Length: 293
Ligand code: COA
Ligand code: MG
Image (cartoon, rainbow, N blue to C red; front, side):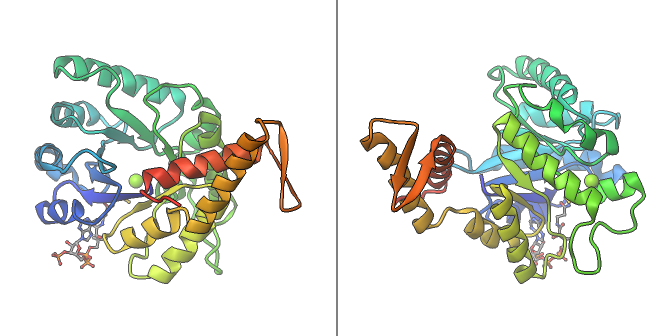
């Protein structure tokens, strides 16, 4: 999973386009990009789009539902679970207990629809409120449905009353850097992918690339997209390079050839278990992206 493209659920045209954009995950949105009056229409279109979506391989369909306190999520789930999406994006998540709450709802809906137990995964947006941001340590071991963690700056700005999330140099201010950092840490502790938030200036592909490179450097392995043009850039940056794959293969081989000791030397550099784990993780991502070396 490298790119996750949001598509407003009430737009038939965008739903059609979204599935041919090359995104690893299409997220049909029922939340912020859909006005309240359009929610019923969007639920129907979302269910149709999931049923029509090309499935299998590495392309997945998720639905962003409305949050647990919205009073709308029951109708959202009733409409879309029957179409068997791969997962749900939960906005404004307040912690691991919210994942368990949603997992219970999904379990009931799966039974009602004759679907496999636990088949529908959950990716929460973990920094959209102050409490949610402060509760990110509660995600590890919350549910086997957890498939990744992502974060958001827009709703958090509104929640804390910040006039901007970035300073005059384009750098996130402290609250947002904190939110970004705890997302990486909580994802690591939960052993799920850390997914970077949207880059809203969708015409600025150079800016997007720089944002992706920083994210990849810092530990994110995927990024949310809001426009089809963003998808190729995200896929490219988050696909491990041939050099990285060759190096990871060399690390794994060095440990195996030495009989799996705790530490090996390669070209005068020390490699221990954390390096081995990192190499194995990179190879798994490369395999998922279809890269071999
Ligand atoms: N998914 C699928 N198709 C999309 C798309 C998306 N997210 N964003 C744009 N497109 C389509 C447009 O419909 C257009 O197709 P068309 O010319 O055949 O009609 C084409 O791509 C080019 O779009 P463009 O004119 O460059 O952008 P726009 O002004 O139509 O749309 C946005 C700009 C921001 C409104 C649009 O990209 C969008 O809706 N993004 C998703 C918003 C969202 O889901 N937000 C919630 C998460 S933060
Ligand atoms: Mg939002």
